[in-house]
Image (tube, rainbow, N blue to C red):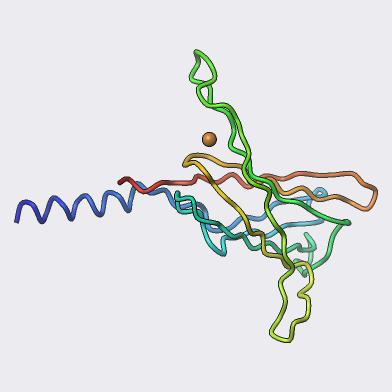
Length: 154
Ligand SMILES: [Cu+2]
């Protein structure tokens, strides 16, 4: 019985300590005139498996789907860590992500709606998901969704 209780405790503990990334976020562009709603289609779980993020562009006021700017890109970045004595972990990126349009059941493009794939969070810890929108005048604006990628304690 002692052993059973102990192992039960370990199971619950490992569930609680595996930090779950926040489920969704609204990134604000163009001083609030454009928003990117981002959410997990497949959340990072601390393993080397692929994560997938949904993204839809919205008019910041009416919140209807729009197709802003001329293009956008998504990149992953793990910031460096300094312990006060020096850089203990240099910042680094990951593999390039891929962006796919989302289609409806009839195979038609859904306005402003995308699936970001090939997202590999190769280490546990804090990651930045940088969404860069390129406007028609070639100006770029980057907004960041910061997520905590937890790990399984095996
Ligand atoms: Cu790292």
